[in-house]
Image (cartoon, rainbow, N blue to C red; front, side):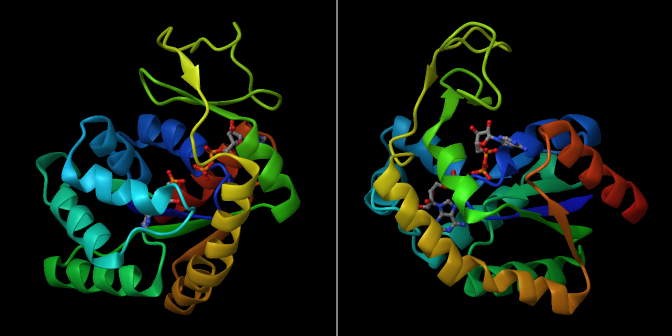
Length: 216
Ligand code: ADP
Ligand code: AMP
């Protein structure tokens, strides 16, 4: 199963990805996570990506595309994967298509998680992430049992630097201009499935798995 999770920042891609990769036993490939890990390791890639991430801008296409191509060649991705946060521009989508055409491994489907823009701001500014395992929480909508402590691994929860009001607004605008056109792009290919992301987390999950189980 080769899936893309599409949707604005805060739509719930990471939250659903955590659950989906457990069910379908495929790797979760998040370009945002790759950049944050690179930054933590202090690599050149991480430092370059940070310049853009801090501003709420997209990392340049050539950099992102090369990283994803390399990641998709790894052993664990040969029987499927879930892409989260990639592609984010038409150029990235076209590069991915070309690469999948060459390897004869078409996408199973693109799940578009749709949420009202007003709700996204509250979701993102209240998001907390585990330093240990990367699990995602929300101070109001999906709080951990003990404040600032991850239910899954006991790790410390932190707020991402780009989850401030100002940067979130910029990220939502970048989404509107550069990523939203992908809805039409994949719609035309007949592989786009839109789910209502404003429902409860478990209901969104049920909607997505119903679609994917039909595609298998
Ligand atoms: P994305 O990966 O699309 O940017 P996340 O999965 O990190 O989004 O979710 C953003 C925030 O919204 C997180 O704090 C998460 O806990 C919360 N969230 C995710 N799905 C829902 C939902 N269906 N209802 C309410 N809050 C949600
Ligand atoms: P995310 O974790 O998906 O919210 O991504 C965080 C940030 O990483 C984004 O705001 C971008 O700066 C950068 N990023 C992640 N994925 C991509 C991508 N596919 N293309 C360009 N920039 C990306």
